[in-house]
Length: 360
Image 1 (cartoon, rainbow, N blue to C red):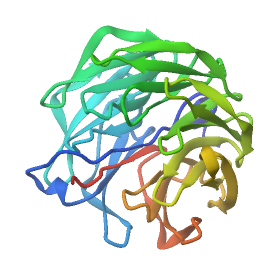
Image 2: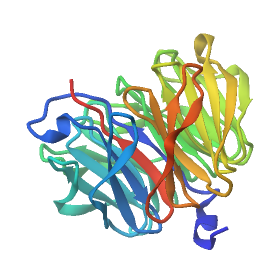
Image 3: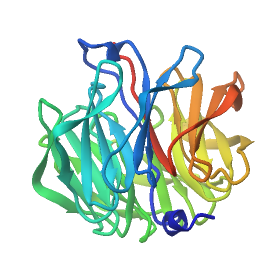
């Protein structure tokens, strides 16, 4: 086990964002789909284009160098901008997506965050960005300018629970939910028209070390993976944005679940488990999950994050210990099968992946 990654294994979020389509472009990025992988120990960002068969092709250059400790990545809904949390430099890097998908730093390459920024999310409107700061126990909040650059809101940060690890925003843009790894609960926020967060109700208890959160807007459900318990918590989202536990509350995952993502094209949930597997769940009535299957990953690969492409036909997981990306096809039975080329090379400790989505 690699020493540096061991230090972050239980205390950091490997969070994945798939951008929502919207707007129009005047460059080639509107006709292609790109994937970006942040490599925590590179430090670097790997850049890829999705082929028609779903396989990833490296761009040229295939890797760019960001700040110190890149950890999580998010794509703006207009597919023109990318934001990366920098865990060690307490900042957020800002990039513009070029005509061929290549990332270029904005004139102001970084903006300040608080201590140990982990997870990053872009508001569905494309007007705001939120970053969880794990050691400051708060969330930085920013407005997005017309050129994509970030500016702190007032106040620049709001209090969360202990060790905020992951943040998700509902598609309506009215509520946000944060998994707090140290206090083992979920913070619930309302989002004002000016983008500022305010606590909706008191945090609700999850399992031990909640690490990643995903919203099923169709069924008004929230899913949270609990890294130390090897399970997933299920919550109902009420019209006012508040959460209540489902029955059953917990479903079993693989060992050390790290991230959760939803494939709404086939009503499936995937969980990447650092213990070398991927759990597959069917979404049933009222959003309740039932186990579908478990996919074995290469031994000692440590699947740390997983994402589905916009078509819902392909999935990709970052393998933190083997410095690779696994590539899967989604079968008619909702399970995953490896592509003819099952894995491709990334940088050192790939921790998060984001995929752009073609504009309408």
